[in-house]
Amino acid sequence: MNLLKQKDHFMFFLILTFIFISSSALSISKDSVEEAKSLPKLSSPKNFPANPVLKESSASPGKQVFPILSAQGALAVDLDSGVSLYEKNPDAVLLPASTTKIITALVALDTYGLDQVLTVPGGINVDGQKMRLYVGEQMRVEDLLYGLLVYSANDAAMTLAINYPASGSGKLGGYDAFVEAMNKKAKDLSMTNSHFENPVGLDGMAQTTTAKDLLRATEVAMRNPQFAKFVGTRSVSLADATGKVKYNLKNINLLLDEVPGVLGVKTGWTENARENLVTYIERDGRKVAIVLLGSQDRFGETRELIDWIFASYEWREVKVPIALDNNLQSLPEDKQ
Image (cartoon, rainbow, N blue to C red):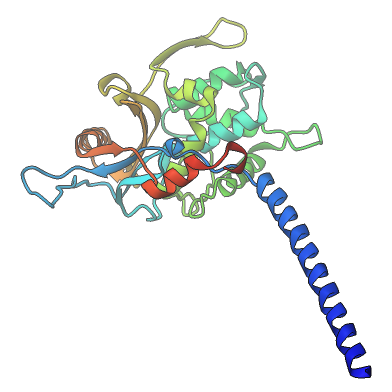
């Protein structure tokens, strides 16, 4: 009799356990469904950018003839997909020359308003390309940026740097603070192999960059409509704040006039750096950035590289596997 009672108690316990586990499972299942609904929806396959793919060479099937450049470092990238189209020593640490002014301009745009008026300081002793600003002259920041990016004017770079304000003090932070801000900007842009000791691009042991770093900076800079406007300007007439002193500046980037789709960005040259050129081009709906450092013919080699890229690559739509695509499409909208 006692044995029968024990069996009844045991069966009752099993039933209670089953009910508890079942109800818990239902609860977990409900929570999982709600959590799944709250997850972000999967992107449509149509949102993937087209990928550049090398075409088959008709002359040499299975082989490609790549451009041979004198540049010590070079990199070309399709900006929408991030795919490298051409590279030669992209991480080689080289001299930036006046491509430095890309970073100079970004720091100036972060710091000043375009209508802000700066005074040309005394003591600007810098070689190379200059607007020939005079001491005490009042210049709008916008016009200094035109001088910096269209004419590569070193005195415009120095004026922007020396007037740099110290944060929160109202006093001038000056040249050293500006250079410090340039290196912070480079760090923020993940330019891991770049360092600057002047805003002009004069050669120095600590004035270094790579093709890969400059391409990163260019991609960010060209998203800024003000920067893009400056570097894409072929020529400009401007004046000091009084309107009395006139400047007529022509862009020294020859490709702006010679190659369809080129929209900037920046030239550079010193005897030690040789010829540098950073280029941004939009053609046939594609966006490509090119950096050449240490070239013997920056314009000719960049033109050759542009022609080769658009003749050798085709952009193909990226598609997900059919089975996965069908599964995605068959899901209700709130489950995708």
